[in-house]
Structure formats: structure tokens, C-alpha cells
Amino acid sequence: PNTMVYSYQAPDFETKSDNGETLVLEHRTAFQGRIDSPRLYAQKVRPLLIKAGFHPLMHDPEGFIYNEGPGKGTSKTLPEILQELKTAKPAPPGHAPNGYALMVRHVDDKVMIVTNLKIMDYMVDTLRVAWVCKYTGWRKVLGWDAVIDRDDRTITFECPAVLEQAKRRFLKGDIMIAPKHVTTPSIMDIAIGEVPPDGHPDRANYLAMQSEGSSLLGLMIWLTENYTQALFLTRWVGRTSHCLSPDGFKFLKYALMHLVAHPFATHWGGPTCRSLELSTPIKQPYSTEDQEWGLYFKYDANLSTSAKSMTGVVGMLAGGAIDNVCQSQQCKAGETHTTEVVAGGTALNRIITARGLLQEMHYP
Image (cartoon, rainbow, N blue to C red; front, side, top):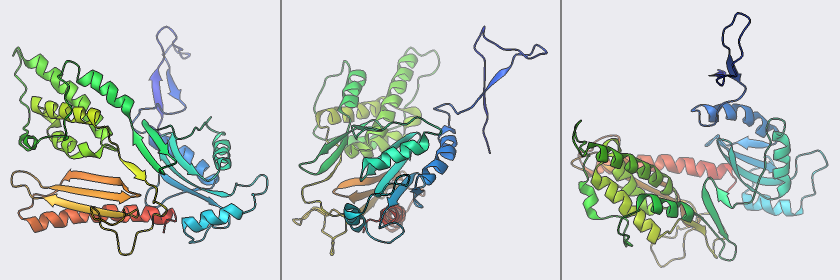
């Protein structure tokens, strides 16, 4: 259904109806930040993207594939498609340009990989009937700095400026150390906080600590997208986020100190990464073999007798993690077998999605 957004007029600038009633404004577009604004934008932009030749993926409808040229409508692999595009004749004037592109959409931001900039110009021209769009190279992607090393054939998403800002805000006045590890074993004993009652002299400071701790926890959740070494710590502290304790806040600050001292973000690729096709047999991780560049997943689980067990899943592609899961299981298992089976089911669900996406992108 269509969603209509109304608001009051600015004070002293109200317009009234013929009978003297103050009117409200009907907005022609949704406000950015409204919970339904991404959905409303998608309803308008999706038909235009499809018109431009971008086809949504079945496994992720916010991902789009553009494939015009000799390999269009075939089951050819991406290397075969790209090879044919090198010798393909240019498309006639007024037609969609030949090429291949992959695009993912996040609200009104779009991240794309294209074989030539004509595809970008064609998409921008198509969307111009409704929006003014512009595009730039991969300098920043959704808040992350995209560091591309063409000599080593790697790409890294990092955010040193965000880490520096977090250091100034959350670690001001603390004794700075450079922890070798992101946390300590005592984190397993973390407990829910206890807010002092009304009238207690420490109540205001405790609530202020919880407010700052919640802000840092939210930042850490975002950081762990690519600084995955802090993923478990963040998830474990997050279990007490409804009433954060001083110890929980200290563990978050300890992890932030670690990231500031060792800002090693996930990177993909390498000098020998020439194909994303899985080796046969697969090259085992942590072995003396060459690195495996194809898609593979590893999962594990731990049995907890005091709380729900945990599932851990890591999906690897091009030498870096593309999927990380660290979550409580939906049921409390009484023995190891059930815990492992539940973790395996979670991993299988992620594998099917990841493999389906690669197949739709024409990766072998």
C-alpha cells in the first residue's frame, strides 16, 4: 500500500483553509531515516533499474546483474563472458552498452563493479527521470575506506579515521595500552549490570556509563563487519546490552584499544588469486598448501551448561571472510551432538545463499 507522510507547517508560516482550519503538508517523498523509506525508494527505483537492464538476484533482491553482449541469456561463466566482451562490437547508438556489471543497493547508495563506464552513464541517464545521480571511484564504500593495491591484487575495507575518532571519544582519560589479544578469558564471567535505585548518589553516573557503553557497542557492531577479530567479544557483551555493566564497558574499551593498536581489517585477493573456482581437492586451511581462493565455509559450536550454546560460522572467498556468524542458538541443547547439528544447519543455510549468489553472478 502507498504510504502518505504529513507534517505540520512551520510556525508563523501556516496556511489555512477557507473555513480557517490550519492545513498540514503532504510530502511527495519519504524522509530519509524513516523506517519505511528504503522500501518506498525501492518501489520507485526498481522498475527503472530493470528498464536499464539490471536484473535482481533471486537470492538477494537488492543485488542486480547487468549482462549485455554475446553472453547474455547464456549459462557461460564469468571468465567466458569477460573474454567475449573483449572482442564484442560496440552496441548501436541508443541501445544498452555491452558489458557486465554487479550492483548491490543499500537504501539510496549503490556499489557497483563494471567492465566499462558506459554502463554507469547509461544507468545514471535512466534514473535521471526521477533522481539526479552521480558516481565516483571506490574511495569510500558505505563509510569504509576502500584500499585497492593493484600490485598485490588486494582490496581492503578499513576505517582508520573512525578508529581515531572512537579513541578520542571513548578512551579519553584512560591509560592507553596495546593489548596483544582482543579480550581476556574473564569475559566469560560477564554479568548483567545492576542500576542503583532512585535517589542513590551513583545512579546518574551509572546511567551515563550505560549510555556511553551502548554507543560504543553500536560502533563495535559496525566495526566487526571487517574487523572480525572483535566479533565474538561484541556479541558476548551484546547479550547484556539491555543493562550493561561496568565490566562490559571495560571489555568494549579494551577491545577498542586492541583495534587501535592492531588495525588489521579483512582483505581479499593476493598475487596468486587468479580464479574464484574451488580447487579439487580443496586446499585445506592452515596447511602448507597454497591458499584456497574458492568459496568454503567452516563452522563450530560450543556447548554451554549455563546458557544457550553458541554457533560460529566463517565463509571464505578470495582469501578473506565474506560471512561471519557468532550467535546464540535458538534452543538450549543438553549435549554436544545437538549443538553441533544446530550449528551445521545455520551454516548450511548461509552456504546455500552464498553459493546461489555466486551462481547467479556466473561465477564457476
